[in-house]
Length: 426
Image (cartoon, rainbow, N blue to C red):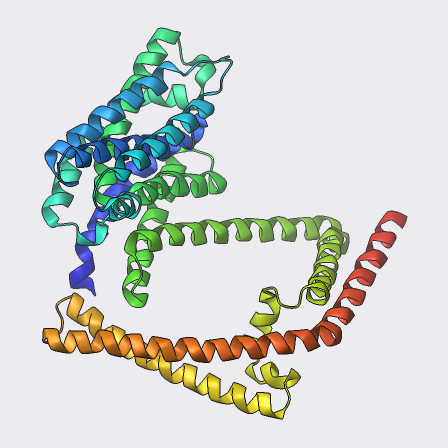
């Protein structure tokens, strides 16, 4: 795995180094979607170049994207004002929407437009070459050095806009910031796609802002988080054969959700130490009310997705056939065994396909075609078994609505009512 992923990992580390720092400024300025807007403007430039006959990865496409991005940077720098009638975030949103719509209109006239849009969104970081990583690092290094040399006015504008100085000077520094920011975004979008670039910019900075207050501390925490998520996302993409860019973005979201849950648990623990069990009454009422709502939904709409019940049955497989008759249980057992065999076979053959894709195994084209046909047949068998299981589950849900849903509704509503009444009384 390491021999195939070390170059994409280096690319992710380069993205982390520059985007986390820029993300601190973006978060402090309150222009959260400026990266997404500039990335979409750059994508529009690439799309126009593609329509003009230039390949997506060509130098001409890069200069198209850079020209469009610098225009967006000039617009954002000029629209910044302390008491403007229109917030800058509104202008950023308008630029993003118009750029996205323009890209769709242009792509509609270009061949293979759908594939082009997909590449712009998720990028092709898995196929990046060492030369591209070196070029990116050489481009970002002087930009990082420039930001270090002029860090004081940029930090003042971002973190203390009221004391930043005269409006004309602020606009000049703003243009320098947005122009360099645009160069970074333009280069990153070609490599990693719009979504991954946005994730590297916003998520580490957001997580760091919740954990520490100083700018230096946020930078260190953001860098550490970017490195950890890059390694974990690439490893997950390899292990489960998932699209690399999308996997890293989801990994960022999962880590941010974990941090939020940890902070919420810490706040609850602190409140419990200060006020005792009374601090948990609100959570207890919400828990009972959720239980009652789950029961109500099961009674009213047994055929909808009840994730809590699906999770309970997955944790205790023996509970699944409890609400089936004897014939349905036999059918359920056969379908489960068939689905398990199909899943195992599909995973085995897909693992062989991955080895062929990565060059670890060589097989003939005839054998590859047989593998594709076998996968298609197995997938049909798996779909049939899953359809049978879905039908049996629907029958079970009709019976569970009274045996499980109604008691849950009564217990949940009653528990929430009793706790709320006691809370009001005290």
